[in-house]
Length: 424
Image 1 (cartoon, rainbow, N blue to C red):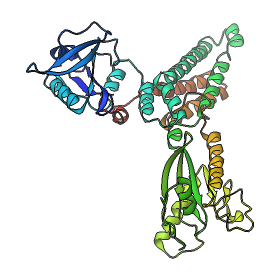
Image 2 (tube, one colour; image 1 turned 60 degrees about the vertical axis):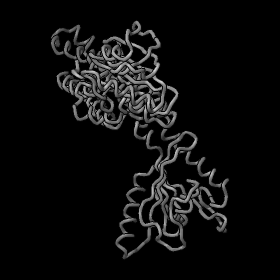
Image 3 (tube, rainbow, N blue to C red; image 1 turned 180 degrees about the vertical axis):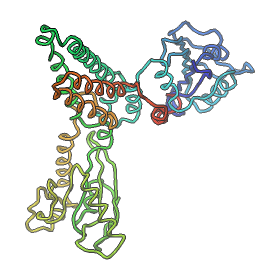
Image 4 (cartoon, rainbow, N blue to C red; image 1 turned 90 degrees about the vertical axis):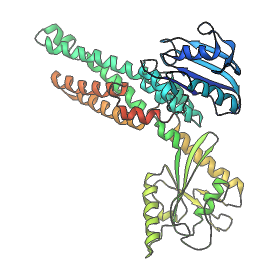
């Protein structure tokens, strides 16, 4: 158990109606009793007067006690529900700091202790971090599923199935000279492995956690002076990009994040793709525009249709001036209705590319590992020799074991828990 007992404000920054201060560790009960006097029974709320070391009252607070190991952190845990004024929180925090063995928690330390003490798994911890940062409904669903342990349960279920399949192969190898084993059970593991692999492939077809967070990447591209920056501003409803009649005004990528109707977007205005320039800075902007266009989920092309990249949406901007629009969609910055129609088109692309078909979503690092698992499973199914199939299956189980959290490194944990607030 950790030598230090930690405390921190776990609710929002004051002022607020209520402020929740949490204390966790082996000195938690003694420290709370020093402030509140006799503590209420476990998991029973009671009002107590909190007092400082000089006996002066600090606040009338609701006190709850959660003895370890059956607490959120797996340690003795106390919650002090205070009045949410800045002075109250500061006074109680100072009184806790005066208690022996107590210190203020580091960011994410409460959740880290929950992981260390087996109260949650790594995927639940990551899901909780994502839940704190969720901005859209799909982000909330995926993060909540992970924080509730759904992802960990899914991965653990696959690992159990593959372990069973591995045992079947070992039985085949050990008893390959017995006819009943060779004929009746030699391929019994294959349907199990194939079913697990297909479930993994279906999960990999889902958008990643990062994709759900970053949203649809929309790049406005085309020749100089085509109206990209004006359309960019119109989509945002504000003047984010400089607009002038001078060709080449936009020299670099201008990026803005926006959430519209619950869908996140990453909009990028880019430099005009001039056929030739001797301006070094403009050329850098053109190179960046081309590189970003190659990554785009949707390219809004504001040039001639014949020069549009494959798959781009051909936009007739300045539709109020065009004699024959002819694009996939016509817009004018002077027509709010045309901008709304463009947003509807973008939303249809977002729903196609970013919609979750189940509540479970993977982070990119998890997706990379799971691709390795599916490759090994496919290899095992293609092998004829049981020994080779068993080896491929062993590799798959090792990779999957890492996903379950067996290979988590201290550096990864530091990066994860640094995303949390002090009291979480």
